[in-house]
Length: 219
Image 1 (cartoon, rainbow, N blue to C red):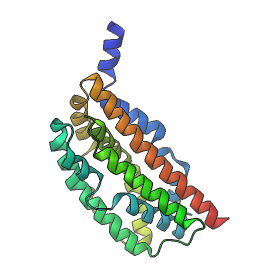
Image 2 (cartoon, rainbow, N blue to C red):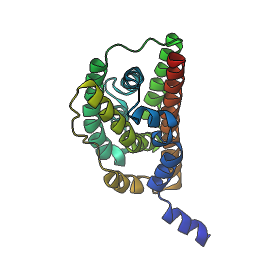
Image 3 (cartoon, one colour):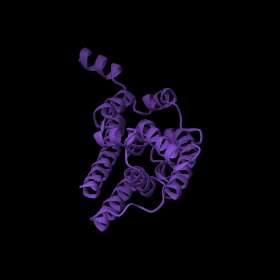
């Protein structure tokens, strides 16, 4: 029993989110690494920007949805902060998509659009979950995973002639300080972990899709 308590004290809800991010987050996906390379094709960068815009730039956005529903009232202030900051990221995505030009012509476009619609719907369902802690975990994972995504967006901005705005999402230390007490009970810790797992899974699926699209275009 003592070892169980010590383990729980050592591995907070935020620890679990970061561990999931280290194994399943965007930073480890090979396609993102390819897009970050200097040799990345314009059309592949443009495709990634359009996909991220399609999934994350819709109004009001996942963090705002989570804040509006707020199934975990003690998370509302933090969710409000993230939602306000993510509005700037949505605007940035829209500017990048406009600068990138049309979505690159790719075989299977209809199936790709259906997959991105399904991903967006899955994120909306996570944000609106009535399970206390689920949306909190999903938004925490989004904040964590947005760091490598933002690096990619800034790389694309350099290519497309867009000035990157400052990212105002909470720093990871701020998020950690917020998430740790929000996952203080076993039930909320499990819900936060579940929400994070689902967010990372959606992002991983998106990179898989973009990788397949790049292969289909480049033969």
